[in-house]
Image 1 (spheres, one colour):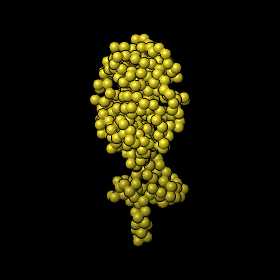
Image 2 (cartoon, rainbow, N blue to C red; image 1 turned 180 degrees about the vertical axis):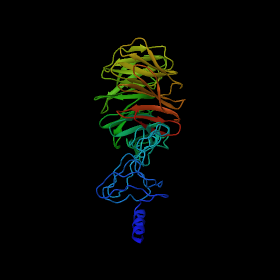
Image 3 (cartoon, one colour; image 1 turned 180 degrees about the horizontal axis):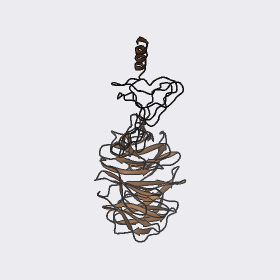
Image 4 (cartoon, one colour; image 1 turned 45 degrees about the vertical axis):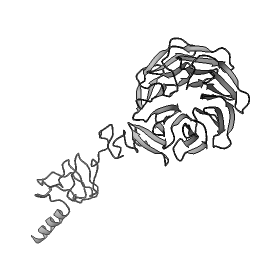
Length: 404
Protein backbone atom coordinates (compact mmCIF):
# COMPACT_ATOMS: atom_id res chain seq x y z
CA UNK A 1 0.00 0.00 0.00
CA UNK A 2 2.78 2.42 0.79
CA UNK A 3 4.52 1.79 -2.59
CA UNK A 4 1.21 2.20 -4.45
CA UNK A 5 0.55 5.54 -2.72
CA UNK A 6 4.03 6.72 -3.53
CA UNK A 7 3.56 5.89 -7.21
CA UNK A 8 0.28 7.76 -7.29
CA UNK A 9 1.95 10.75 -5.61
CA UNK A 10 4.66 10.78 -8.30
CA UNK A 11 2.09 10.67 -11.09
CA UNK A 12 0.24 13.61 -9.57
CA UNK A 13 3.46 15.54 -9.23
CA UNK A 14 4.14 14.98 -12.95
CA UNK A 15 0.73 16.43 -13.87
CA UNK A 16 -1.42 13.36 -14.30
CA UNK A 17 -3.85 14.68 -11.69
CA UNK A 18 -6.34 17.42 -12.50
CA UNK A 19 -7.68 19.67 -9.84
CA UNK A 20 -10.36 17.15 -8.92
CA UNK A 21 -9.37 14.00 -10.71
CA UNK A 22 -6.71 11.92 -12.45
CA UNK A 23 -5.97 11.67 -16.15
CA UNK A 24 -6.19 7.99 -16.94
CA UNK A 25 -4.85 6.04 -19.85
CA UNK A 26 -1.40 7.66 -19.85
CA UNK A 27 0.90 5.72 -22.14
CA UNK A 28 4.52 4.95 -21.59
CA UNK A 29 7.47 5.27 -23.92
CA UNK A 30 5.60 3.31 -26.58
CA UNK A 31 3.46 6.35 -27.30
CA UNK A 32 -0.02 4.70 -27.28
CA UNK A 33 -2.86 7.25 -27.51
CA UNK A 34 -4.10 8.50 -24.20
CA UNK A 35 -7.71 8.24 -23.15
CA UNK A 36 -9.52 11.26 -21.76
CA UNK A 37 -10.15 10.49 -18.16
CA UNK A 38 -12.51 11.88 -15.67
CA UNK A 39 -10.22 14.68 -14.52
CA UNK A 40 -11.51 18.20 -14.91
CA UNK A 41 -8.25 20.09 -14.32
CA UNK A 42 -6.38 22.30 -16.80
CA UNK A 43 -4.08 19.39 -17.55
CA UNK A 44 -6.72 17.39 -19.48
CA UNK A 45 -6.04 16.04 -23.00
CA UNK A 46 -8.94 16.79 -25.38
CA UNK A 47 -7.75 15.31 -28.63
CA UNK A 48 -5.87 12.12 -27.95
CA UNK A 49 -2.55 13.82 -27.22
CA UNK A 50 0.38 11.43 -27.25
CA UNK A 51 3.41 11.61 -24.95
CA UNK A 52 6.44 10.19 -26.73
CA UNK A 53 8.76 10.37 -23.79
CA UNK A 54 6.63 8.43 -21.39
CA UNK A 55 6.28 11.49 -19.20
CA UNK A 56 2.93 12.87 -18.21
CA UNK A 57 2.16 16.47 -19.22
CA UNK A 58 2.81 18.81 -16.34
CA UNK A 59 -0.48 20.53 -15.47
CA UNK A 60 -1.86 23.84 -16.60
CA UNK A 61 -1.73 23.45 -20.41
CA UNK A 62 -4.48 22.37 -22.76
CA UNK A 63 -3.89 20.42 -25.96
CA UNK A 64 -6.46 20.48 -28.73
CA UNK A 65 -6.73 18.76 -32.08
CA UNK A 66 -4.38 15.84 -31.54
CA UNK A 67 -1.23 17.83 -30.84
CA UNK A 68 1.72 15.61 -29.99
CA UNK A 69 3.65 16.49 -26.86
CA UNK A 70 7.35 15.80 -27.19
CA UNK A 71 9.14 15.42 -23.91
CA UNK A 72 6.73 17.58 -21.95
CA UNK A 73 7.66 20.69 -23.93
CA UNK A 74 5.16 23.54 -23.58
CA UNK A 75 3.14 24.34 -26.71
CA UNK A 76 2.25 28.01 -27.16
CA UNK A 77 0.67 28.05 -30.62
CA UNK A 78 -2.54 30.03 -30.78
CA UNK A 79 -1.59 32.16 -27.81
CA UNK A 80 -0.91 35.13 -30.11
CA UNK A 81 -3.24 36.69 -32.67
CA UNK A 82 -1.45 36.88 -36.00
CA UNK A 83 -3.77 38.84 -38.21
CA UNK A 84 -6.80 40.42 -36.62
CA UNK A 85 -8.25 43.66 -37.94
CA UNK A 86 -7.91 46.61 -35.61
CA UNK A 87 -9.55 50.05 -35.44
CA UNK A 88 -8.97 53.01 -37.77
CA UNK A 89 -7.67 50.93 -40.61
CA UNK A 90 -4.95 49.28 -38.56
CA UNK A 91 -3.93 45.65 -38.34
CA UNK A 92 -3.12 43.81 -35.13
CA UNK A 93 -0.78 40.90 -34.80
CA UNK A 94 2.75 39.79 -34.03
CA UNK A 95 4.22 42.75 -35.97
CA UNK A 96 2.63 45.34 -33.67
CA UNK A 97 1.12 47.15 -36.68
CA UNK A 98 -2.06 48.59 -35.19
CA UNK A 99 -2.95 51.86 -36.92
CA UNK A 100 -1.62 52.65 -40.37
CA UNK A 101 -3.32 56.05 -40.40
CA UNK A 102 -1.32 57.74 -37.61
CA UNK A 103 1.47 55.34 -36.52
CA UNK A 104 4.87 56.69 -37.59
CA UNK A 105 6.32 53.15 -37.61
CA UNK A 106 3.56 51.82 -39.88
CA UNK A 107 2.47 54.77 -41.98
CA UNK A 108 0.08 53.82 -44.74
CA UNK A 109 1.23 50.21 -44.60
CA UNK A 110 2.85 47.97 -42.01
CA UNK A 111 6.57 48.59 -41.67
CA UNK A 112 6.65 51.91 -43.55
CA UNK A 113 8.43 54.39 -41.27
CA UNK A 114 7.52 58.09 -41.33
CA UNK A 115 10.55 60.08 -40.13
CA UNK A 116 12.67 63.17 -40.74
CA UNK A 117 16.16 64.33 -39.84
CA UNK A 118 16.08 66.77 -36.89
CA UNK A 119 15.21 69.61 -36.55
CA UNK A 120 12.64 68.69 -39.22
CA UNK A 121 9.68 66.75 -37.82
CA UNK A 122 7.34 64.11 -39.25
CA UNK A 123 3.87 62.83 -38.42
CA UNK A 124 1.87 60.09 -40.10
CA UNK A 125 -1.40 61.75 -41.08
CA UNK A 126 -4.23 59.92 -42.84
CA UNK A 127 -1.79 57.25 -43.98
CA UNK A 128 0.75 59.70 -45.48
CA UNK A 129 3.98 61.05 -44.01
CA UNK A 130 3.63 64.81 -43.44
CA UNK A 131 7.04 66.40 -42.83
CA UNK A 132 7.71 69.93 -41.60
CA UNK A 133 11.04 70.49 -43.35
CA UNK A 134 11.56 74.01 -41.98
CA UNK A 135 9.70 76.29 -39.59
CA UNK A 136 9.97 79.82 -38.30
CA UNK A 137 10.95 81.27 -41.67
CA UNK A 138 9.78 84.65 -42.95
CA UNK A 139 6.80 84.31 -45.26
CA UNK A 140 8.10 81.55 -47.58
CA UNK A 141 7.01 82.03 -51.15
CA UNK A 142 8.44 80.23 -54.20
CA UNK A 143 9.55 76.59 -53.96
CA UNK A 144 11.36 74.12 -56.20
CA UNK A 145 13.06 70.73 -55.80
CA UNK A 146 15.87 68.66 -57.32
CA UNK A 147 17.24 65.17 -56.60
CA UNK A 148 18.74 66.10 -53.22
CA UNK A 149 17.15 69.25 -51.80
CA UNK A 150 14.16 71.56 -51.52
CA UNK A 151 14.77 75.27 -52.26
CA UNK A 152 12.57 78.24 -51.38
CA UNK A 153 12.48 82.01 -51.07
CA UNK A 154 11.47 83.98 -48.00
CA UNK A 155 9.68 87.09 -49.19
CA UNK A 156 10.03 89.35 -46.15
CA UNK A 157 13.29 87.89 -44.83
CA UNK A 158 14.89 88.45 -48.21
CA UNK A 159 16.61 85.06 -48.10
CA UNK A 160 17.00 82.06 -50.38
CA UNK A 161 17.28 78.74 -48.55
CA UNK A 162 17.47 74.97 -49.00
CA UNK A 163 17.08 71.83 -46.91
CA UNK A 164 17.78 68.12 -47.73
CA UNK A 165 14.80 66.09 -48.93
CA UNK A 166 14.99 63.98 -45.76
CA UNK A 167 15.01 67.08 -43.55
CA UNK A 168 17.71 68.62 -41.38
CA UNK A 169 19.12 72.07 -40.74
CA UNK A 170 18.30 74.58 -43.51
CA UNK A 171 21.11 76.34 -45.36
CA UNK A 172 20.94 80.02 -46.34
CA UNK A 173 22.12 80.41 -49.94
CA UNK A 174 21.55 84.16 -50.23
CA UNK A 175 20.40 87.01 -47.99
CA UNK A 176 19.68 90.69 -48.30
CA UNK A 177 17.34 90.20 -51.23
CA UNK A 178 14.49 92.64 -51.83
CA UNK A 179 11.36 90.51 -51.66
CA UNK A 180 12.77 87.24 -53.00
CA UNK A 181 9.95 85.63 -54.94
CA UNK A 182 9.99 82.97 -57.67
CA UNK A 183 12.72 80.31 -57.71
CA UNK A 184 14.04 77.55 -59.99
CA UNK A 185 17.16 75.33 -60.15
CA UNK A 186 19.25 73.50 -62.72
CA UNK A 187 22.17 71.09 -62.28
CA UNK A 188 24.57 73.72 -60.93
CA UNK A 189 22.72 76.85 -59.80
CA UNK A 190 19.66 78.30 -58.15
CA UNK A 191 17.88 81.27 -59.80
CA UNK A 192 15.36 83.67 -58.31
CA UNK A 193 13.60 86.97 -58.86
CA UNK A 194 13.34 89.95 -56.53
CA UNK A 195 11.37 93.13 -56.99
CA UNK A 196 14.03 94.50 -59.31
CA UNK A 197 16.60 91.82 -60.17
CA UNK A 198 17.16 88.34 -61.58
CA UNK A 199 19.81 86.54 -59.54
CA UNK A 200 21.66 83.25 -59.38
CA UNK A 201 24.02 81.45 -56.99
CA UNK A 202 25.68 78.00 -56.77
CA UNK A 203 23.48 75.25 -55.34
CA UNK A 204 25.59 75.19 -52.17
CA UNK A 205 25.68 78.95 -51.84
CA UNK A 206 28.55 81.32 -52.55
CA UNK A 207 29.06 84.17 -54.96
CA UNK A 208 25.82 85.63 -56.28
CA UNK A 209 25.52 86.67 -59.92
CA UNK A 210 23.24 89.50 -61.07
CA UNK A 211 21.65 88.52 -64.42
CA UNK A 212 19.34 91.42 -65.19
CA UNK A 213 17.20 94.14 -63.69
CA UNK A 214 13.67 95.38 -64.11
CA UNK A 215 10.67 96.30 -62.02
CA UNK A 216 8.21 94.04 -60.26
CA UNK A 217 9.75 90.85 -61.63
CA UNK A 218 7.83 87.60 -61.13
CA UNK A 219 7.91 84.04 -62.37
CA UNK A 220 11.08 82.32 -63.50
CA UNK A 221 12.04 79.37 -65.72
CA UNK A 222 15.36 77.97 -66.93
CA UNK A 223 16.76 75.68 -69.62
CA UNK A 224 20.24 74.69 -70.80
CA UNK A 225 21.07 78.15 -72.17
CA UNK A 226 18.77 80.81 -70.73
CA UNK A 227 16.71 82.04 -67.83
CA UNK A 228 13.20 83.48 -68.43
CA UNK A 229 10.94 85.77 -66.40
CA UNK A 230 8.13 88.30 -66.64
CA UNK A 231 8.51 92.04 -66.03
CA UNK A 232 5.15 93.21 -64.72
CA UNK A 233 5.93 96.92 -64.97
CA UNK A 234 6.63 96.80 -68.70
CA UNK A 235 4.39 93.84 -69.61
CA UNK A 236 7.24 91.93 -71.22
CA UNK A 237 8.55 88.36 -71.19
CA UNK A 238 12.34 88.42 -70.94
CA UNK A 239 15.23 86.02 -71.23
CA UNK A 240 18.96 86.27 -70.53
CA UNK A 241 21.97 83.94 -70.92
CA UNK A 242 22.69 81.75 -67.89
CA UNK A 243 26.09 83.36 -67.48
CA UNK A 244 24.68 86.89 -67.65
CA UNK A 245 24.67 89.39 -70.49
CA UNK A 246 22.20 91.30 -72.60
CA UNK A 247 18.57 90.28 -72.06
CA UNK A 248 16.09 89.73 -74.90
CA UNK A 249 12.40 90.64 -74.94
CA UNK A 250 10.39 87.66 -76.18
CA UNK A 251 6.98 89.29 -75.99
CA UNK A 252 6.12 92.89 -75.16
CA UNK A 253 3.08 95.03 -74.43
CA UNK A 254 0.85 91.99 -74.63
CA UNK A 255 -1.82 93.54 -72.42
CA UNK A 256 -2.66 96.80 -70.73
CA UNK A 257 -2.81 95.08 -67.32
CA UNK A 258 -0.28 92.29 -67.27
CA UNK A 259 0.22 91.56 -63.57
CA UNK A 260 1.03 87.88 -63.25
CA UNK A 261 2.62 85.46 -60.81
CA UNK A 262 2.83 82.53 -63.21
CA UNK A 263 5.51 81.65 -65.76
CA UNK A 264 6.48 78.17 -66.98
CA UNK A 265 8.06 76.61 -70.06
CA UNK A 266 8.50 73.45 -72.09
CA UNK A 267 11.01 72.68 -74.83
CA UNK A 268 9.32 75.04 -77.32
CA UNK A 269 7.57 77.91 -75.55
CA UNK A 270 7.16 80.14 -72.52
CA UNK A 271 3.66 80.21 -70.98
CA UNK A 272 2.22 82.81 -68.62
CA UNK A 273 -1.00 84.13 -67.13
CA UNK A 274 -2.25 87.72 -67.21
CA UNK A 275 -4.54 89.42 -64.74
CA UNK A 276 -6.71 90.51 -67.69
CA UNK A 277 -7.91 86.89 -67.72
CA UNK A 278 -5.62 85.54 -70.44
CA UNK A 279 -3.31 82.54 -70.70
CA UNK A 280 -0.60 83.02 -73.32
CA UNK A 281 2.52 81.54 -74.86
CA UNK A 282 5.43 82.63 -77.05
CA UNK A 283 8.25 80.73 -78.72
CA UNK A 284 11.54 80.48 -76.81
CA UNK A 285 13.06 82.44 -79.67
CA UNK A 286 10.49 85.21 -79.37
CA UNK A 287 7.96 86.47 -81.93
CA UNK A 288 4.19 86.73 -81.96
CA UNK A 289 2.51 85.52 -78.80
CA UNK A 290 -0.57 83.25 -78.84
CA UNK A 291 -3.59 83.59 -76.56
CA UNK A 292 -4.53 80.10 -75.40
CA UNK A 293 -7.46 81.13 -73.19
CA UNK A 294 -9.25 84.34 -72.30
CA UNK A 295 -11.96 85.56 -69.93
CA UNK A 296 -10.47 83.57 -67.07
CA UNK A 297 -11.23 84.81 -63.56
CA UNK A 298 -7.89 86.15 -62.30
CA UNK A 299 -5.57 83.32 -63.46
CA UNK A 300 -2.37 83.00 -61.42
CA UNK A 301 0.01 80.04 -61.14
CA UNK A 302 0.62 77.96 -64.26
CA UNK A 303 2.08 74.54 -65.17
CA UNK A 304 2.60 72.57 -68.38
CA UNK A 305 3.02 68.94 -69.47
CA UNK A 306 3.39 67.23 -72.85
CA UNK A 307 -0.17 67.98 -73.99
CA UNK A 308 -1.77 70.75 -71.94
CA UNK A 309 -1.38 73.94 -69.93
CA UNK A 310 -2.88 74.13 -66.43
CA UNK A 311 -3.62 77.13 -64.22
CA UNK A 312 -5.47 78.26 -61.11
CA UNK A 313 -8.22 80.90 -61.22
CA UNK A 314 -10.47 82.39 -58.59
CA UNK A 315 -12.63 79.31 -58.10
CA UNK A 316 -11.21 76.65 -60.44
CA UNK A 317 -8.33 74.56 -61.72
CA UNK A 318 -8.34 74.81 -65.52
CA UNK A 319 -6.55 73.30 -68.50
CA UNK A 320 -6.32 73.87 -72.26
CA UNK A 321 -4.44 72.04 -75.04
CA UNK A 322 -0.99 73.41 -75.90
CA UNK A 323 -2.35 74.70 -79.20
CA UNK A 324 -5.34 76.40 -77.58
CA UNK A 325 -9.03 75.54 -77.71
CA UNK A 326 -11.88 75.31 -75.24
CA UNK A 327 -10.63 75.39 -71.62
CA UNK A 328 -11.70 72.54 -69.34
CA UNK A 329 -12.50 72.91 -65.65
CA UNK A 330 -10.82 70.13 -63.67
CA UNK A 331 -11.76 71.09 -60.11
CA UNK A 332 -13.18 73.80 -57.89
CA UNK A 333 -11.00 76.02 -55.69
CA UNK A 334 -12.08 78.07 -52.67
CA UNK A 335 -9.17 80.51 -52.69
CA UNK A 336 -8.91 83.89 -54.28
CA UNK A 337 -6.19 83.23 -56.81
CA UNK A 338 -3.13 82.85 -54.57
CA UNK A 339 -2.62 79.12 -54.89
CA UNK A 340 0.22 77.27 -56.59
CA UNK A 341 -0.02 74.49 -59.18
CA UNK A 342 2.17 71.60 -60.34
CA UNK A 343 1.67 68.62 -62.63
CA UNK A 344 3.15 65.17 -63.23
CA UNK A 345 2.20 62.36 -65.60
CA UNK A 346 -0.90 61.37 -63.65
CA UNK A 347 -2.20 64.31 -61.62
CA UNK A 348 -2.50 68.04 -61.15
CA UNK A 349 -1.66 69.34 -57.65
CA UNK A 350 -2.59 72.71 -56.19
CA UNK A 351 -2.81 74.65 -52.94
CA UNK A 352 -6.14 76.08 -51.85
CA UNK A 353 -4.87 79.03 -49.86
CA UNK A 354 -8.03 80.16 -48.12
CA UNK A 355 -9.24 76.66 -47.30
CA UNK A 356 -5.80 75.55 -46.06
CA UNK A 357 -5.84 72.44 -48.24
CA UNK A 358 -3.45 70.71 -50.63
CA UNK A 359 -5.35 68.92 -53.39
CA UNK A 360 -4.96 66.76 -56.50
CA UNK A 361 -7.06 65.67 -59.46
CA UNK A 362 -6.27 63.36 -62.41
CA UNK A 363 -4.92 65.23 -65.45
CA UNK A 364 -7.89 63.96 -67.43
CA UNK A 365 -10.38 65.15 -64.81
CA UNK A 366 -12.33 63.24 -62.20
CA UNK A 367 -12.68 63.21 -58.44
CA UNK A 368 -10.48 65.61 -56.47
CA UNK A 369 -8.47 64.25 -53.54
CA UNK A 370 -7.63 66.20 -50.40
CA UNK A 371 -4.00 65.39 -49.59
CA UNK A 372 -3.45 67.69 -46.60
CA UNK A 373 -5.72 69.89 -44.50
CA UNK A 374 -5.22 72.53 -41.82
CA UNK A 375 -2.33 74.23 -43.63
CA UNK A 376 -1.53 77.84 -42.78
CA UNK A 377 -1.78 79.79 -46.00
CA UNK A 378 -0.36 77.20 -48.44
CA UNK A 379 1.20 79.06 -51.36
CA UNK A 380 3.54 77.66 -54.04
CA UNK A 381 3.88 73.94 -54.71
CA UNK A 382 6.42 71.57 -56.31
CA UNK A 383 6.44 67.86 -57.07
CA UNK A 384 8.98 65.10 -57.72
CA UNK A 385 8.70 61.35 -58.32
CA UNK A 386 7.53 60.48 -54.80
CA UNK A 387 6.40 63.57 -52.92
CA UNK A 388 4.81 67.00 -53.04
CA UNK A 389 6.23 70.13 -51.40
CA UNK A 390 4.72 73.50 -50.55
CA UNK A 391 5.26 76.69 -48.57
CA UNK A 392 2.90 77.84 -45.83
CA UNK A 393 2.97 81.61 -46.09
CA UNK A 394 1.24 82.48 -42.82
CA UNK A 395 2.98 80.29 -40.22
CA UNK A 396 6.34 80.22 -42.02
CA UNK A 397 6.75 76.51 -42.71
CA UNK A 398 8.06 74.44 -45.62
CA UNK A 399 6.22 71.13 -45.98
CA UNK A 400 6.58 67.72 -47.67
CA UNK A 401 4.00 64.94 -48.11
CA UNK A 402 4.79 61.34 -49.09
CA UNK A 403 3.50 59.50 -50.97
CA UNK A 404 1.87 61.98 -53.30
